[in-house]
Length: 439
Image 1 (tube, helix red, strand yellow):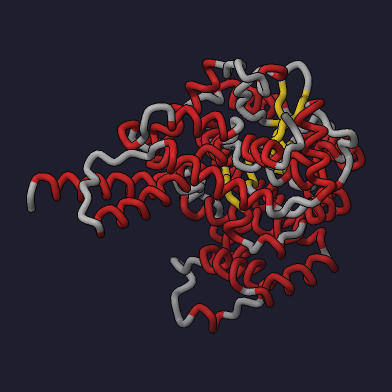
Image 2: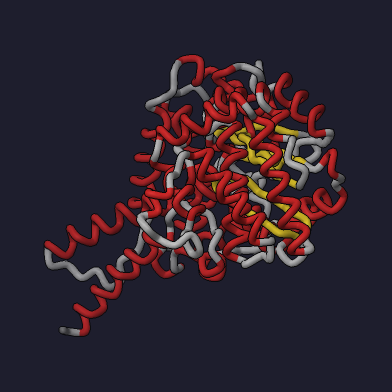
């Protein structure tokens, strides 16, 4: 292979690697953090630690809110690891275990019980064999897992809780049976969770900390059903639990008041990285906040090698992200996808690609594509609300369902400092300009 050909192959491989790096999954695994992590949430971690350390048994359930894609999962995973020397920590995504449309308060609690037992077995926590047997029998009885389903495997060493995790995800009949069973006798489920936690705490010498992620990805109607109608059940575990909720939830006065009254604590809100001061964001000469801008550039460059980006492209990607990690990654990923298509076209035409970079034209094509995806769903009322927010940094009615849905979907972004204010997603600011709704 010639030197030029080798260089072209290497360039194509570099873009493929960058595309793979831009998967939207949070940095939960240690290796992912090592590869892509950028530390910038020290204050958030410290505040969470303080909340947990100061909690007492009657008031040890916390609600954690934030925008989709703002980095909540990465922070919570880091927090769980940070606390694991003092606490028996269980961190899991409910969406990884149960289809989103099926999630309810009962299977949240049941899944918590499964995760506690699975972690206790994996860490070989020295719970008495008789207690372990009793707990395993309880799970098998309540889920109708018969001995025959073990296919002759010995009870010792059989991964019952691994099987339960799989069946929770794939077996709709079992999920319905669990719901029916514990709708009739919720106390049985709650008592078992607390008994499991007590045995783990006694055997390990550590308090329990459970972090349940990705509840914020549910539809707002589900959030109301779970956290308004059935909140009391979620507060029954006698150990510390952190539940995630969508940012839009805290604009629902009824639900917010209910959550804070029942938990006796304020909702903890993880802020988005505020790229601009409030009145600088729409000015032609407005300058981004240097520290936040640098952080987002670091996040991008951990995943995409700087030499794959032409001058000014990385900076523009950061500005169009609105300070939301997911949007930064989403824009960069679309750039890489389009660039890889362009590489194939150039190779078919016999052109050298060894020095090819994502340039302004590729970036603009990516921005246009993503903007069209977002704008196609907007109705007349949505556009009017976006125009209000652009002009006033607030909607006329912050309780309007259309506004809350756009906040939930990151069409609108909330920023916090001394006051809360809102801005339109930068891609949709472009759309409003195209439609001549703003100057």
